[in-house]
Length: 299
Image 1 (cartoon, rainbow, N blue to C red):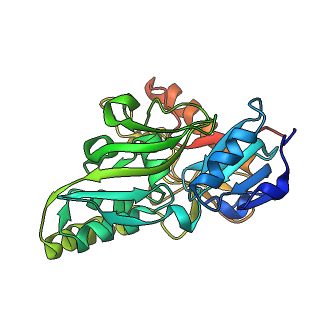
Image 2 (tube, rainbow, N blue to C red):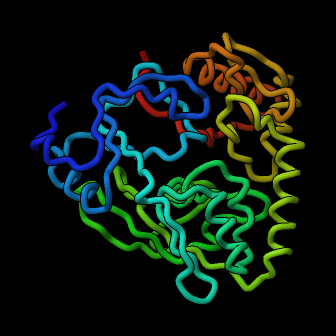
């Protein structure tokens, strides 16, 4: 792969053959051909403008909802750091959030500013960029309900602002262009009392703690909920609770979560997911769709 510019001109951090397992929740998987952590917005734009258009680009947030295959990710993986993690009130009940800001930071800032309606972001283990791309949601809220617009750096390096309607949101999906990186988003809530907002965040946290394997190496919800069904129930009814493949296991606590019990490879995890899909299809006739993003090359 060719990086067609002087690497000395890059102001951020550019790493060849970078291991991605430490950066994703499953703690498994291969390397990125290149990992780029831009210093700021201009650095990201300059980098993408100078990069051969044939080189694939992928954004990586907290790595919570992702399987990185053992063969690694070709091209450039872009990870937004502290320069992209700021959250501030604009006006009224609108927050301006950097693409690298976590759901916890966004929801906590909203609470401090007396903005309700963003509490559900507390429960999504990811960054604003990932939420916007995936129409992240939980506990009755979705990003499409709160997004005003977002700033996106296209693969060409051009910075554009896309409104909610431009993203073509459906369940856990948007029409964000391939290779685009979300660098900021505006979320709008409604007036609320900080104490009541905190109480709702506490309720959500307690519900997650009670139902999900939060202290395990997992990737969050594995499959989308099919129309009229709960994915976890379909998995359970197909007899998959506790099912294992290599070092991977279907969680006993919540059957829509896969776990790395210690030494699982990405092949184990993805293979187990495919076996669950096969068993569910055989048992109920329902075809489960992956919610977890699977990226990279098979070995």
